[in-house]
Image (tube, rainbow, N blue to C red):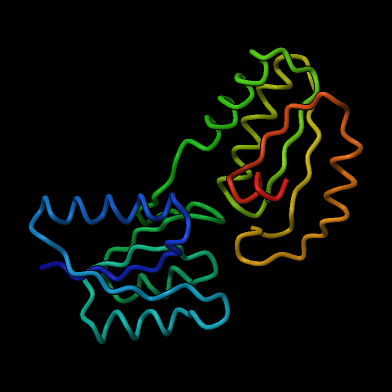
Length: 191
């Protein structure tokens, strides 16, 4: 039986769907044993992960490893699968998506509705937000329009220095009607 160390935040629907997929695949191939370390921005370190993985005898690590040294984890010699948030990492498997294509799809939706004013709300430090913005921007620009953006310094899910007054002022200043694309559900709820 394979032992898989999970490091993920299962509070989002996306992460829960990933977990469901891991479990389904595990059942198809003969069963895996999972051990979960909850994500904590302050206490999760490479050394903690390495100690737990070695003590438990983990065969693989799957997780969100945004502020973790991947090189340190690679040194223990087991496969690492990254659920990327900040960037993709070369040399290991990355669980990722067509974020750029998602941005293009959102732009096409709004263009089909004949909007002329476009805005994006996201966070440049996260790969999925950054690439959604880039795809959205490229399609909007290609169609002859411009894009106004408001980007948080951090992913608002995990704490932010976000100033809701500044965000509110930005929203008030946008031309109306506006096609506003938020990078994900948490950002859309804030709007």
